[in-house]
Amino acid sequence: MRMRATHIKPFMNVLVIGKGGREHALVWKLKQSPRAGRLFCAPGNAGTAADGATNVAIEHTETEKLARFCIKENVGLVVIGPEDPLAAGFADFLRGKGLKVFGPSKEAARIEASKVFSKELMRHADVPTADFQVFDHPEPARTYVMSRDYPVVVKADGLAAGKGVIVCKDNAEARRAVDRIMSQEEFGAKAGRRIVVEKRMEGEELSVLALVSGRTILTFPPCQDHKAVNDGDTGPNTGGMGTYCPAPVGTPKLIAEFEESVFVPLVHAMKRGRYPFQGMLFAGMMLTNQGPRVLEFNARFGDPETQPLMMRLKTDLLDLLEAVADERLHEFEGCVEWDARPAVCVVIASGGYPGKYDTGKVITGIAEADALPDVKVFHAGTKLDELGRVATDGGRVLGVTALGDDLAAAKARAYEAVKLIGFTGMHYRTDIADKALRS
Ligand code: GLY
Image (cartoon, rainbow, N blue to C red; front, side, top):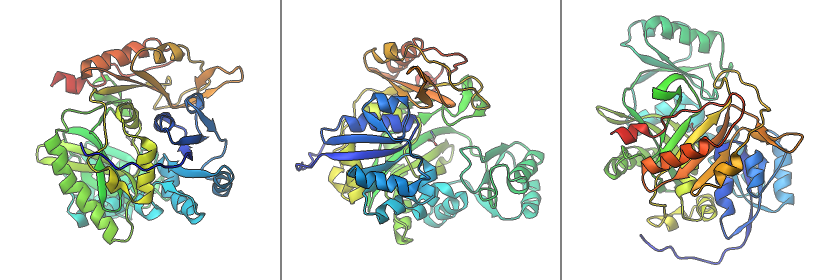
């Protein structure tokens, strides 16, 4: 481990944009920085407020208002959590106001916001991914899917809150997917203007996140998410029902090869294209029989990948994020420190999620769960009700995260904490990390 030269740096006020579990985990970790001044979260949740941030009731779409707030409160760094503001160019807007921002430009955020852009860039940079075709009219797409080997995946080009990716087992399903996206515009007119059709890849999924700034790529330990709502990877897909980190299937050799074959060519291609990436580059990868392949890129921290990552990160997060924004990330090469213990995050969701669900259910047991050693309950969809009680306010409600001496111990501790928590209709998967524990 290299030692980093340290300089005395001033206190800094920080604004985190977002209201999910990812943002609570970022706020919690930023608060631990000896340099953290006042922390703000817009709009935040009950957990960000409980952990020392001032929640600010301004939506990211109220751009002028947020910029004025930053200037008035002397915010030294804005950290943008979710994809929507990045895709809308909020980072560029704030930079234009002279603010320091962690997060990619609108042009670079297309790596997530446009599946067509992302796949074409991967093809151009020789990044391993599934073969694909792009369509901007439904008729040729319907003809094309008649001649495919199945299963295939039909993807809406634009952001669709994680729902615009449809796995099809035969050509009737594929034609229906084309209609839903392009003709019925189920995910919006803009998101469905173009589609990507590709062969479905088989294998184990892995989330590999790297801080990127200039030419520096700093890869974090690999995580594994659990997208399906029910145990055994059954039921509809969600935003993620739990994660663990490190995922042993992402061996150091595999991650080193992945950096060389994926992150390096992609980051260089983006730089050459004059849309350099600055922020967190998140590769969703599939470990196929032919080797690792990229499923998709995200232009932000993952949720719920961030929760176990922040539990394990020992290096000052504020220093790291500021270095990204300042293009000095090279100072941290070889000296980011991690807790050697693995972490497991179990997401507790509202009854009905990922379909329709109610909100406003009072949650009990959070304090008791948080009091267990090496446990942190990260809030996602929570708010304080009119009586000041923590209540549900979203589909994914909490991310109960625990460290353990090994993965089995981390899992046991996380579920011990989960069992202390209650609200009407809550549900969670009971098999987070089992894939690694079985192998
Ligand atoms: N965990 C998947 C995502 O953040 O998109």
